[in-house]
Image 1 (tube, rainbow, N blue to C red):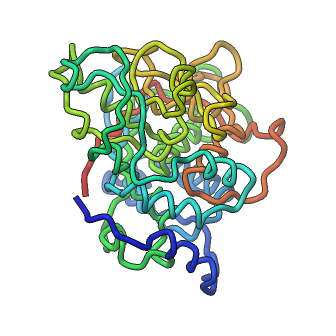
Image 2: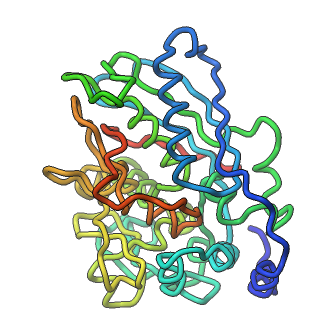
Length: 363
């Protein structure tokens, strides 16, 4: 554990008075150990296009390294990612979000966060209760209330080295890979969504964009709790698995009543809210094992129009959509948005993943 440092909120206030470094924007370096540029040039170009779209939407001065691979992932998985994570004190992250406020959504979201060292939340499936699925209030200020597990990309946006020098210097070391993405090279893809998606094919740019979206921080610690519990394995302790910055805006009707967050995996409805749970902006999926059979790191599956590019399901022959919900979620966890069109014009690209398979790497 890192010691809790005093004066961090004062540091955030002072940082607002510092000269602002010119923004170069979000940039990607795509590493190509599988030589996709030769073996699958359409796929490589699709990742480059997906990165360019994210760069057009987000303006943080962040450089990310993404490793690209291809493999046979079976018939039910379109892509999977190994994402780099790091532990960060909630207090540090809170101060980062305070300094990052640049939109109405940011102001509302920050105002909804606990002004405290620790975050209380509903929890379940822990060793403390014998793996019981019944929710209980976890407010004991232990490690999982004090710390978050954030993707390296999310940390670079919310706690930039220019404002918090040296705090996460290891994430900026040469050769650091922020995410390693493997796509299923046995499926049929349409690599050019500009003229529509061919029947029977998957929009590859959408696949790439969603995987990058997980690296940016659209992930939930609920997935780890859901998967590391009976009947899959014995229950882990509260402090063995941490929640993510996105989980700071995860609520249920029960947690709203208590004035806390909801970090449980079960079939009760969970939703994204930036006003302390008063307003549900978009429903979350609730867990593959104990919830609705979709990863909690996604929006809830819906019949008809998906809630956004971060929705579950593979839309063969159809484009997906980047939604305002997708962008608001990234906005409030620390990214800054470029000016965007009205929601009705957000049909940028489509199709999705069956499953996020982001395995935690601690570093």
